[in-house]
Length: 96
Image (tube, rainbow, N blue to C red; front, side):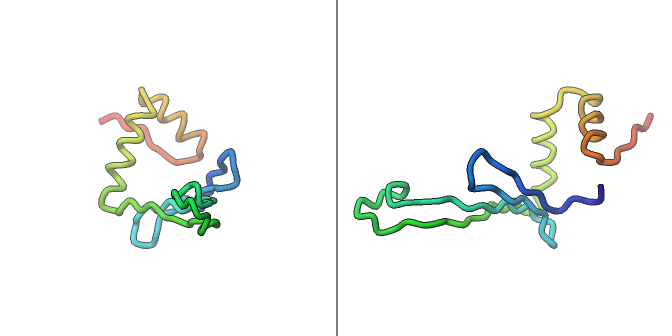
């Protein structure tokens, strides 16, 4: 597996999400929500359709986010190393 720059997350519905790293290093999550007037409080039913959106984590904070995710997800180095191996992400074990 080469360097990953974009993934699609399949949800349990048709909305779906695409997560990518932009050219300037930001993390971008894009999606689409199906809305009707009840979702936005429009009692007169004036709006229905899709709302496209993006959530951006600036490159400056991407490393912080990554460290927080690792802290929440893994309890040991071995668990993290096994996950890297399963995802075909290269890692090196060093004795300092």
